[in-house]
Length: 605
Image 1 (cartoon, helix red, strand yellow):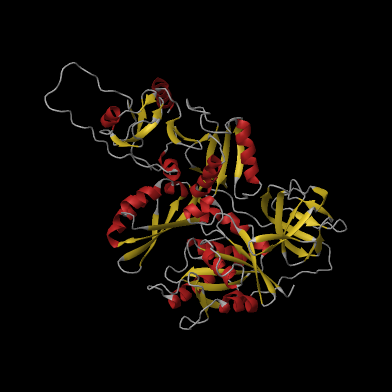
Image 2 (cartoon, rainbow, N blue to C red):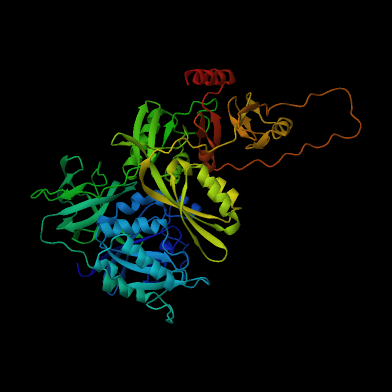
């Protein structure tokens, strides 16, 4: 085990984790010198490459000085914090990456807190030191303050520091050193990250921390062997978190070498392995020797804070574009997601409606986008926060919101966050004319705020947030002040009808789009919903007007992404999701039925 190191790379989003892994793989010889290697090679998921973020934690390994270094690349976005929480059992130390200009950010605090609680040894890497506005020494002071604030012990406070430019493939002990490679970082890993502990001669004990899937062998469980050893064909006892035990046989055994899994006959304590042959293996299960069954408790995963309902699509266009459209398809797919997405919770409300709870809007929107690309068709409701009753009092999730904006937009930001029950707790100058604001705000106040924030700051603001705690319910929040433009009849949108409708507000569709009654085609300039006939044609007459008719000019429609649609919908609206389309609609499609439903609610109140 002295020739093993297990580390995770953790950081705030966009601080350079995946780029650093790319360079470590390149400089330890895992790519040919003439090989065309894409940037962020670990982000092999289509959504990860499109959005430029890491969504799933992934394993790789390198060899340096005859020592195998297992590396786990983790997400940096707060919504995927569960991916960080579940891997702490697999590693003995962490590389904490911090941007040399931005310094510690919200997710930096979260991931550092989780790793310190797990007793992992930190190695701090101050990245992007080649930035013209880099301030590495100030950032180091901020990191030290963060360690103290999180209650780090004396050993953890004595952390080593490496300065790096992952993009350029450089690492050094001092920012002024002249170097041409990342040897300083690799040496620091060898020196400061402890080798795994555990008795090779003892009985097998291994916790499954991740689930993968292979088309040939089925489900693959990934974890670190805490003690003992494991062989292909060996009989083991699987203990799940509910106390159930079953005897199984390991059919295939793998370890990680570079970006590949390599089949092995025998692996001993300390290494990270992937095993197949267990059909219903789950995250948190413990593999033990039959001679001594001793389950290991899994790390506690933070509970979800946001939920929405996934329902079977019942619109007039249902079933046209999706391959999987029934409640059985929807149920099976959501249950399958639970096997690997440990931050997710699913509750069946009715046979056609499922309550899905996650860490945030992005967490759930990634699931929605993944499902639609797989051919699923369904509808979702507006995201809402999960309330709890604590000591007889209704409590709601509260987020800590960090905003950096130019000085001229500070007043607007404070005013609009105040309307959403946000409380300003800190305001400090940043670089140039920028001001850094820190708020405590209910999580429901952030639903739909990002698009408003970008509009308020002309796209110049930076916004991050992270879960803070549960606090007393602060009352109703008015988030959307404008109504919807609702199609009054089914048909195909016509330029003439759209031209008349655009006077009422902003359109979401152009000409030639098929619509149905109750479908939302735009946003009203006023607070109420109104119906518009976008299929209306110009009446023809036998009278020729003097001169030529003026061409009808349409304002280009707003491009509604999945996130924008989720932010837009209200409680009485749905988002219809298909592999080809995103359609906004009213929950009750017929205008007369909507009016009756509204009157009944008014009378009841």
